Image (cartoon, rainbow, N blue to C red; front, side):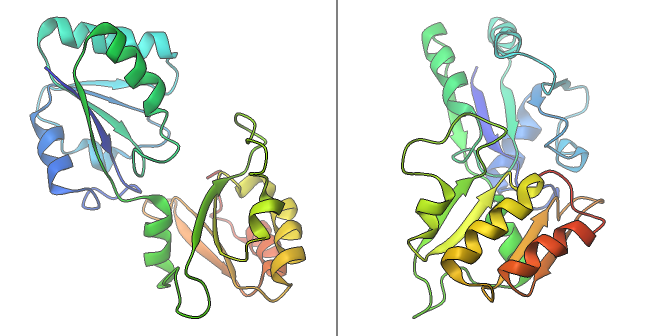
Length: 222
């Protein structure tokens, strides 16, 4: 028995790896966050699979489900949106599984920022413009950012910035970026762009980013 932490990608059923599809299809138990993992991806589960929506479960409750599957000798597909190496909360689950002696592994997925770049038809590392990509998140709705990782500090590098969880703080983010990149810096807002209620809102500049988000009806919390 193994708990498979699987990157479920940005939402579309065909934007997962072949390995992910095989593991999901062979696991009699699937644990997923309903608010983040689309029903399309769940279509890969085998008939009769036990589907457990974890969005309202505590860490202890999730671990109880994994322990139960372990006792039954049933593999678990533990789905996380995007890629499991970025903002997935895999670490805290893996530590507990190690303590319990339950085997686990990780299967990468298509990260949200890569999918957004594809929708926008943009390369994030343009020669002689930017050769560095910084992945970060807005810090107001989650754990505090470590010292030196505030957005203003990261923007000072002048690299391509990918900011997760920022749809609810567009005005603040745009103002910070404009100070470092200038008001004419290309920017875009993207959220749930591979789901039915999805899309992307490219802005002409960092200043226009906030206005794009306010007037774009498809923006949802990212």
